[in-house]
Length: 88
Image 1 (cartoon, rainbow, N blue to C red):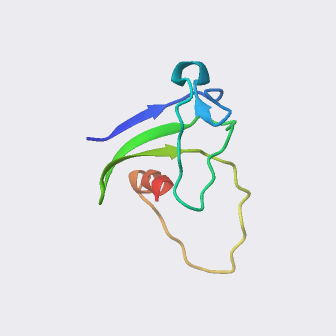
Image 2: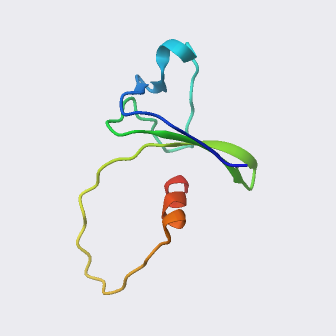
């Protein structure tokens, strides 16, 4: 069972979704990662099966400038595969 909850651009404020509804519900991150306080793009919560059972993952898209590579090899990902790369 996989579930995804998608939020509009303005749903994440002060580090939580819908602060008036969750009333102090806290979120934690894996060691070494920072939970953003705001995101100008739509965010997602995904419920995914992992080696440790089902877990929730937060997805925060961000704009990155393209980087020029000196390599001459190409990797192509299937759409579903590239979507899953957001979680790992």
